[in-house]
Length: 263
Ligand SMILES: Cc1cc2nc3c(=O)[nH]c(=O)nc-3n(C[C@H](O)[C@H](O)[C@H](O)COP(=O)(O)OP(=O)(O)OC[C@H]3O[C@@H](n4cnc5c(N)ncnc54)[C@H](O)[C@@H]3O)c2cc1C
Image (tube, rainbow, N blue to C red; front, side):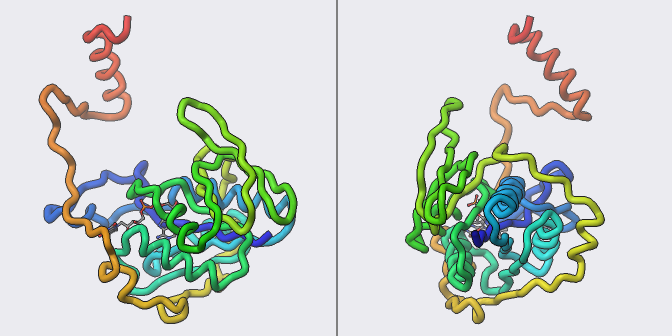
């Protein structure tokens, strides 16, 4: 089975203090530590496990600047067989539909049976997987937490439903699935794995090679334009606890006891 996994390079929220720029255009990105979007890491692990069971290969693709190579290489060190970088200044400022349109062009350059995305990424939009499926006119299932290959044409998939309930569906391939965290236990990527793929060539495709009209993606093609970005002011009665994690936990415990939330 040929599987494409879409991976996004995102600021690592465990490693950074995220601050918003004064002009409200974005977060301050200088000096941030980046990593692969957590959901995408689960998707790559799942793809590797499927290929281990039924054969085939896993390709990881990322849209970004040259630095996206770092996350593609990491996922190759994990066990993905190929990488693909989708890089063009024209892609900057794309909205979710733009991102999905770029991914669609990459999907159609290959012969994939299955495309996996994360359920969501750092902007929390959870829109790319569904939009990609719609643009491809392929079946789509979201919040997938179980995948079983039935035969060459269908998958049996589990979906996480609100309230801890579970739904099982059959879906025809080719299809797009967005993957929920917890579907597996992503393997550890060691320094030896990283070294092994350090010099593997990763193809780079720009708008021209993908056959994309630059005006249809990026800021130029965005139907949704970001106009502001800010941390809401704390509401009346809200208190932001300061200190180390241990100090915050102790203060929280005291507060819960004081308010009668804990005996
Ligand atoms: C400087 C800046 C300006 C922006 N301006 C706008 C704007 O004007 N309008 C607007 O709507 N958005 C804007 N965005 C947000 C950007 O378009 C989002 O990254 C995009 O819409 C996807 O949303 P998300 O990250 O919430 O992805 P989701 O839809 O939550 O992501 C789901 C999955 O899609 C896949 N995916 C998402 N992004 C990528 C990627 N880059 N490469 C490969 N796979 C990917 C991954 O598998 C991911 O798990 C801006 C972002 C930045 C940094």
